[in-house]
Structure formats: structure tokens, C-alpha cells
Length: 445
Image (cartoon, rainbow, N blue to C red):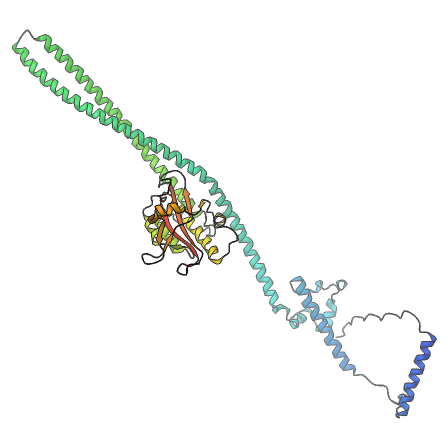
């Protein structure tokens, strides 16, 4: 099939006609060359003009046309990201036409097969990049939804804390009222027993007086007075019994209210523990079951130690955690997980900021500085520990983290740390958890 060859661009015209001097110079130069050839026995007019190989030139033009088209296909695909269709080759934009492609290769599909463009690696790369982009977009949307849910949960925390404080205040009030009621009940019981003993004494005296009245006829006034006193005593005893019954009913009501407050506090504590544990679990899938909050501080430390990759735990951390009555072990677990991420950055030397600033980036806001030297000397046993038990290096606690609010070991806790810079060959660079639980003694206690 005949192919259409793009017209070659015309050579640019000369800027001006040659002068007579130039023509004369060219003529004498040509004549000198002819004379030199004649002296050698060569005459140009006697030789036949050379002939070209038309078939060879046709094959060369075909090969060049194929290379030009294949180059255009690969260039279009590299720029656009997909293989061209016939309508994509616009000659006005410098591309060969579909007719030229069919003239050289026979068909568009044959040209694509010979180009090998469908097996090109960047096609696979583009496909995988688009697939990865879709997955990242879906993941981003999922994370946005999860962040929104966590933000909503975070907004509930102040209200939950307020409800817990109200319930705790009501419980304390109920405990005080119950103690008062029990004291009043005991007092009434003592009065009732005394009144009953007095009634028994009076009844015995009445019986004695009645027997004496039967024997002495002139004694009725004394007997009447004793009978009236006995009736008054019996009336007082009845009033005391009624007051005792009322106090008993009041104590039962207070006991029921106290039990209801106890259940409310337990529910709020469990909900707050779930918030403490689940607030950082932003990467878990929505279909996965929520993590059960730890029941005790010791369980929180054991779970964190099993999951930590960089944070180290001294034996004393487990001993002190077992003695801690802190009511929010989920907060302890979440803080220890944040410390593990902080320890990873500290081990790698990825700092540029202070540890307190980096701790805030991992959700640890109550970071405290080092311990005063006077406190260490006064309470050496409390502020020192062995890294791996007796016989291992003895270290000192330094920075610590405050947890919770209020007063008492049930509402506040501390995590004491040792930060090693790696200068001691026996203690590698890193962060060690030394004490978890109660506030250690200091100069203010």
C-alpha cells in the first residue's frame, strides 16, 4: 500500500544574487579542477552518471517512517499517561495522522502491537498509582470520620467528669447521712433499752404496790401515782419505738440512694476508662471490637510492657502499680503507650525539642521536671531503683508525669521515669519506667 510521505521543508532562499566577481571566481576554480583531472587522464564528461538503488532508499524511508511513528506513540503515552487512539493524533499539534499510520503499518492495532506500548512498565506504574491514590483517599476519609468521632467523645469527657464529681459528692453526702442515721438509731436503741428496763422495774414496783395495797386499804393514792408514772413511761417507750422505726426507714432510703450512687459512679468510671483507653486507638478498624479497659493499674502496666517496643520497665514499676488504688487505669495505659512513642524518638535522636515539648505532641500534658537533690537524699529508697533487679545498676528517678485530678491516691497518680543519655555503658540510651502509682514523698508531705 502506498504511503504518504510528509513533505520536506523547502531550503531557505539565498539572501542575494551572486556578484560577477563571485561567478568569475567559481568559473576559474572549476576550470582549474578540470585541467588537473585532464592531466591525470580523467575526463568527467566521458564517465557515466552514477545510479542509485531505488529499492534500498525505499526501505530506508519505510524504516524512518516507522521510527517516527513509534517515537510519536511513546512520546504521547509518556506525556498523556495512556496509549493514543486514532483521534488523539492531531496533525495540527505535530502528531502523524491515522492515515499515515495505516499506510506504514497496515492498521492502528498492528502499530500498537509492534510498539509494545501496552506492555510498558509505566502503564502498570500509573495504574498502581491511581489505585494507591483511591486507597489513600478512602483512608483519609475514614480517618476524618474517626477524628470526628474522637472529637465528639472528647467533648463528652468534661460532662462525664462533672457527673462523676456530682455522683461522688452525693455518695459522700449519703455516707454522712447514713452515719448520722446509724448514730441516731444506736442512740434511740439505747434509750429504748433503758426505757424497757425502766418499764420492767416499774411493772415490778406496781405489782409490789398492788400486793401491798391489797393488804393496806389506806394506800390507794400511792398506787394511783405509780400507775400514772408507769403509763407515762409506757407512752415514752412507744414514742421511742416509733422514732426508732422512722430512723430505720430513713436509713433504708439512704442505703438505697447510696447503692444507686455507687452504681452510677461505677458506670461513669467504666465509661471514662473506655474513653481513656480508646481515645488513642485511632488506627483500629471500625468493625473491630473496642479494647476492654484494664481493671487495675497493675494490669495497665503489664499490658503496656507487653506491647512496648522501646519503653523499658523496671521491676519496681510492677511492684508499685500493684499497690496503687488509682481509679483510672485506662489513663495509665494510654499514657504509657504515648511514652513508648516518645521513647522511640528519643532513642533515634529525633529531637530538636525538649522532652516536655515532645511529650505534649504525644498527648502527655502534665510532664514534670527533675526531682530536687534534697528530696533524693531524704527519701533515697523511694527515688532509687534497680534496672533489672538486685545486682543490676542502681538508678534514680527524674522526670515524672501527673495523672488525674483531685486529692487522694484514688484520684491522682504519678509515673516516675529515668532518662538515660547513653553515657553509661551499662545503661543504653532510652527511657525507663521506674514507679507507677502513688505520689512519692517529698519536702511538702
